[in-house]
Structures are given as structure tokens and as C-alpha cells.
Amino acid sequence: MFVGGSLIMSVAWVANTWIRVKNGYPLENSWGKAIYPKTTESEERVRLLTQENAQLRAELGSLKDRLGNVERIVTDSGYQLTHEIDRLREREGVN
Image (cartoon, rainbow, N blue to C red; front, top):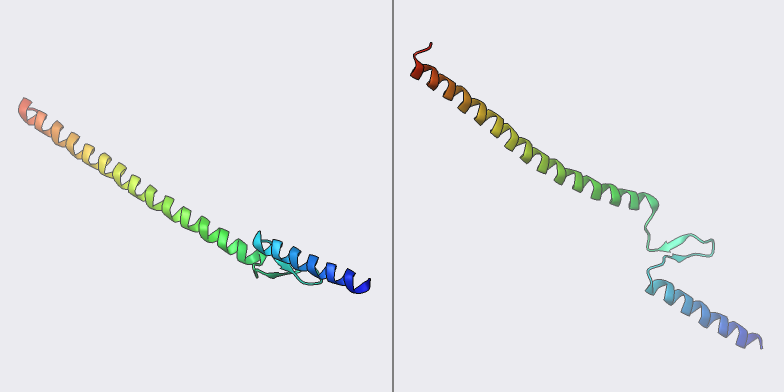
């Protein structure tokens, strides 16, 4: 009877472990600490911060491009406006 019970428990443990691994759950030792995969909280935090850093860098690049376009528009328009005013003054004979 004892042999049958321990055999059933062993098969259940193997099945439980297989199901956990198949579904991506970490394996645990006898004290409940994860042994596989060896992802700690700090490694997960570094991964998330790295992703956020990449997103922020992409957004910063986009904002730099937009700012460059705005600066170009402002500078070109100001130059053209001054040039047009000077041209009109010369045409009217007003100095």
C-alpha cells in the first residue's frame, strides 16, 4: 500500500512540474524560492527600465526633428518677411 501511494505521489509531482514548465511558471525549491527561470525582481526591473529608456530615446529623437522643423519655419519666415518689407520700402522710396 505504501509503495503504491508513493508511486502515485511521484507521478503527480512529475506531472505537476511538467505542467508548470510547459506554462512558463518558475520551478520552486522546497522552501518556495524560484529556481528556474532565474529571473529576479531586479533583473525584471532593469529590463523594464531598458525598454522605457529606448522608448524615451525614440520620442526624444522625434521631438528633436519636430523642433528642427519649427526652427526652420520660424527662421525662414522671419527672413522672408524682413526681405519683403525691405523690398517694399525700396519700391515706395521710403528709407
